[in-house]
Image (cartoon, rainbow, N blue to C red):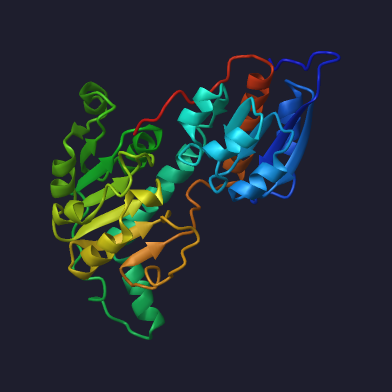
Length: 330
């Protein structure tokens, strides 16, 4: 049962920075179950506008495009930051901890959405569908446009990280008879093996994967993890899908890998720069780009907003948050 706001409690101010919604009625409803709040809605995607919009706020709820930096934390007197999403790479976690600011996120929303989006990209790329579509759009009727294609059963599916989303992806992939490999130094081998997954080192993951799906968060450790050396370690004709964070991949190195055939097809829902200033990657027949939409369904959007607001409400009233961020991992 949700706690009610105490009678006569002081009003807290919560600023929601998100350009995906026109109303914060969902957040207000979830917050007022815990606290007496004033909710303001902005779209502040740079430090200066966030500091201005957040003046007097006790808490922020932010999307992926809102930078909660050390400068922002110094300028505002915050108790709580709620990240409306799974990743927290746009929040200065160490600086927040030093200032006693609680950070919460929503690690268990959109699992079905991102897993199914990743798997749909894997299948589309593995079957050459984007190349066939581009060819027919040019007026061609050519079965060789996506050549060479290989049978999926028996292929090696590689997973970079083994959190909730790749584990859900395995459910969708059941029946394809993949050999599943995973590299995640923060998950013990027994956990992977219990799901029929072979734990491997990073180099082995690159060398052995026919299909490689990225699910790691963006940290100092994973920034540009797939660089020129990583692509050199891959087998020719690898299918690469990224539904995690764009910064995991060095885009210049990916272009080179596509040009020389190391990567046969790439399916990208995330890019280092969003939206991209250079759209040439998306114009290639061997690349599919979707606009960071893997998280989205009507249901997941409502779930996200309710859960993050409720956890901010808990933290504001001194209750234990459901999903407090305690540190970085990948």
